[in-house]
Image (tube, rainbow, N blue to C red; front, side, top):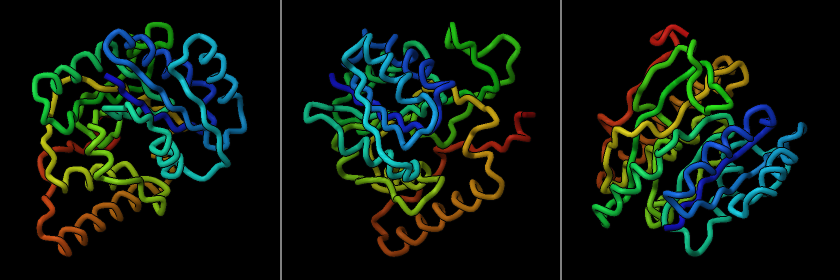
Length: 249
């Protein structure tokens, strides 16, 4: 089954090879199509991706001027192949754990009517880039947080949901996931750890004030949508939200 993984990237030369390697080791579980969207990087991100493309045909690279992560994700959605059955995401500084796709794709085989699996994530402040596992001395926390990488979405669900709201500078993922769950899809909350979320000084979510403002805007938009359309579902009991203080970072 064809699984397209969309990876937006901006100045991630330091991390993107590890992110791609973490996906490539799972080709035995899925027919992977890795769509990298370089959003106007000024470092060696594109060259690093091209070097990986020399090793496999399943990585595709698209470049555009810097327009922000929401537009980069939409570029990825526009590149989905006709044969793509499932869609997932991985940010270019995160890691897809070994066995992640094998575990969750089995849920779709067991239930052909399933629209979505939504799994756990490990917040971690250190990754061993050789083993692609959390470093021995790292601090970590396992949560069911807000991350597109935690989901595997059926192609039909993606088509029904539409694109990302390009008005968001951050929290476009929160807005997208809220729109997904508001539609009442048939989903499974899997106990698979779907990604290692790498905490580092360059995380966009560390920008002062912006993450909270954009997150609250996404929540407000969800409230307005549900008020305007009572058929939409309230999203409860899915996301476990943690602040950095909760895990002593």
